[in-house]
Image (cartoon, rainbow, N blue to C red; front, side, top):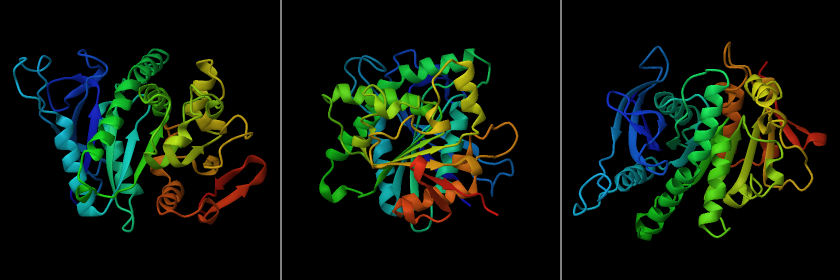
Length: 346
């Protein structure tokens, strides 16, 4: 099997060596973005799972920043977007935009993105994937790493918004004959939801409060976000404006979010309980209870089901195929919770 291609944008610091991006914000500015692609070997090639094989950073020249004032402008985003567009056309694929969570270094981000592309794709609905990698520490030092990652997630908000709006401008600049007609989906995991919440507010600020309809589906997976998020304007109240459908996957036994809730004095987490109240919850928000299918092995605290549990993978594939929520197999509806529960395989 061939390596899996992952496209990326990042505001991490640039480093030397095999892994060209480190655990801190780019010292030039949190808004300074580099683009490129990574090649990841799948488990059929590497017995130790998905493994980053190569990183290609797109060349870039910005007068006064990376080169002298008289040098011509060369944006890395242009070549990456062109290459991604050609792959979408050739594979008749949809685009999945991924924002990873806490304690995820650049290498892990590329590997998990490749895993999503591999496991969420089907022959009928192939996917290409683009990941925004913000500078999560990649360590699990109690208290310090969590607080640092949360600060960096918030500091990365404008960079995430900039990357998305830059892609929109790129598409708008194409002739209609050059369009790939792909659908675009968003998946945010764990603290990536908090990063995206702040990016959403940055987009609203830049666009005068109006949001374009960018995504067919927005998947909020195991969200390390307050469970009142859909009630408040400065959180996710306006997320439904950005997507045709919003899917909230949560698990009441998510150990990682329990730690976030109890030890960090946060309110109940959206990824643990679902929304705090169902009153005025937009109809386009679908709630999916993964409590019975959250276990993925020791050390993962029922927090990684979105990329590992076969029942959840099949559920996501059905959503991407366009099945209505009440027609997706292996779900049962819980009227009092306005949620669908995924049943564990026998």
